[in-house]
Length: 85
Image: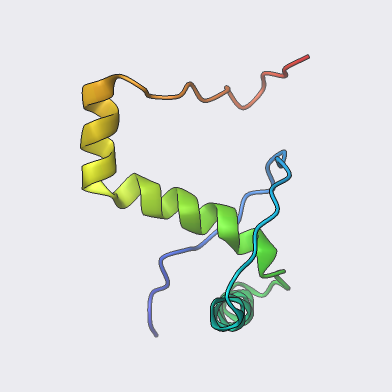
């Protein structure tokens, strides 16, 4: 069985973002959601994969990590039980 780069999809508080995707990218995203959902026994909406995919991409981009570290622009992440008001 092939190991996918995404596994668990967290249900996090979302921030609304509207984007336009090329049709082929959307078809690929839908196919990925179908395959991942089948492997995890879930039904996944393709849109739910965009954030984890971007997050994984940025975490594994060494150039981005180096520049971010050099510029000291690490964004703070909220703790799991903290709420902003």
